[in-house]
Amino acid sequence: MLLLAIKNYSENNSDETANELVKQLKVATFLAAMMDDSMKVIDGIVQEGSTFSLGIIKDDDGKSLLPIFTDWVHLSESVPGKSGFVMGAEWAFSMGKNQFDGVVINHTGMALPIYKGFLASLFGEQNA
Image 1 (tube, rainbow, N blue to C red):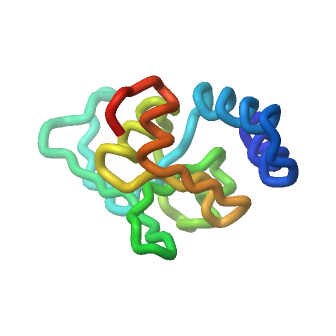
Image 2: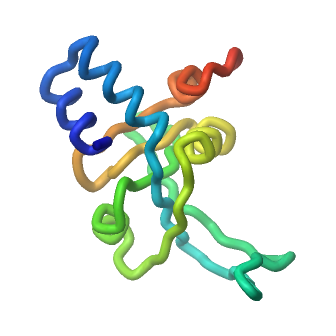
């Protein structure tokens, strides 16, 4: 549903397509690529001292964006052979605004960059 909302919005930037895109962004589930995985997992529990790093994309203005993906196909196109983990929209967008300048969804396809101010407004935060 999110991919269709992105496509519709990019082809017809109207209030209706914008509202549908926002609705789908709020309920989406995303994947993030793990570039370096030093995770220690025992019985499904991540152990203390585990580390991992995420990929970073720089936009044309040099802003750092967290690349997130709608599916494994898009993740694999970006970083072949890397694993990833699933995160809900609120967590993905929180990371994007707190640790980066924003996020970019499916940067190898119909990319949708979303910056801090808009990420904060998605879940009703007062300060961006």
